[in-house]
Image (cartoon, rainbow, N blue to C red; front, side, top):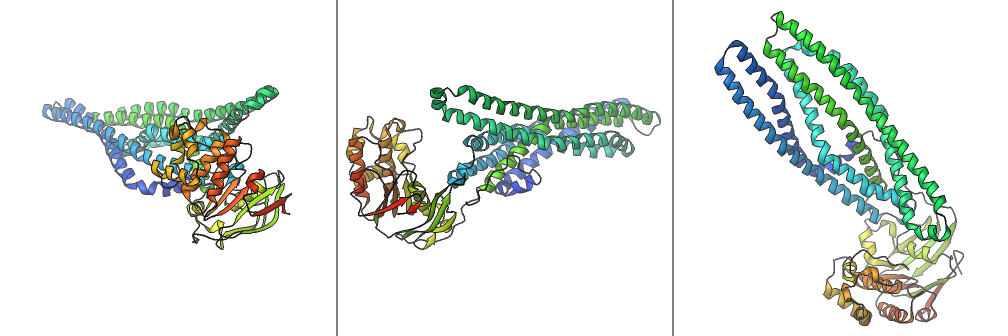
Length: 552
């Protein structure tokens, strides 16, 4: 069995920002301009303390003109700081939202194009959590917390510069008293927060997967009375998620200890400042600067401690998103194809995740324009072979080629234009029949769709729908959805069309329409039909029979 690239529940977070740089690079100008405004806002905020100190010292010295100038400067700095804060926050939020939007689109695109084996190896709820919940959390962090985080960090840097400009000895005392314990507390938080927040994200994804499965099997739970046993499983996952959240909260609370360090440092600052003023080595304005700047410093670390949890949550979510993007790498195929080519499976073998072999060294060729049926008992491997022939599965051994090119070397979009599989259960999205048909490549309009319906000879199908093409797709029967799948196929106009049980379990009228459409689809293309219906099989000149995963 071929190896499946499984997602990590707790992907490594070291170097996550470096790994995210390729996603930031297209938006670097937006980010740079936002950072310039944020830094300017922080500089204006820190400048308030020296301006106030100048006003206070002017009062002490009895210098009226200098006092009035300082007051006017203070008003200007406050207004500038408010304007810069507003503009910087808006620009930074917009830049971040562009990055998050691109990430979200990449995640959806990668999941839509991911190999079926990858999707089948993961719980749908877990993938949904990464593609929606964690992207939403990242978007909220970018919008609400990231501007504040950048502002705090730049304010701390500018504050340290201002303090050192007034008194290097007093600055060194503040650094010596405050910084070591603050760093130790921060490092302790970082050490415990990474694993705790990663475990929390993994537990929440598991619970989301269990909840999603509850909706999938609701009928079985009701009809068999299995709800109590299922609730036991859900309760276990729920308790695990709550326990992970509790560990994350404990890790986050470690940073609160900085508050006690702040109080002690301020007391030391006031005592030493008063002594320096009494000794004539520092004026009153200088002590005012240190008191105000110290408050900026401590409030900055306090706010930083509050933002640390948000930052760690965002870092964890970003690591999980990047892990998803890495495991579902973009299509790298470069093979070129003829418009019409031979579709060949050579010695293909395939096994599912449980290790049970489904196909054993199957070799079969479909020449251009060939019309053939795949027949065999249920479980003989017909549907699996159809997915291998269409490139939805990759064989564990052997190759599948089109026009002599391995399907793995063909760009996905090009392969989907050449080979189309209409599955037995055609899924529809919310919206009308027209909305669903418009999802075909090129976004066809009403004229193209009407031409496709006419080409299939099933104009009475659309006419019979209650609302025509405006009929809600969710109201269609299984057979009518099959017809919808055939119309999509005509809109793509593939060289090879594979139909999986297209006419099985449908009413006679729908079955007649499907057979009419299948007969029309034969012209000018290779047609491979998995069928049990005798009238459908009789339309096909060649049969390929599978028995227990082997050609019979």
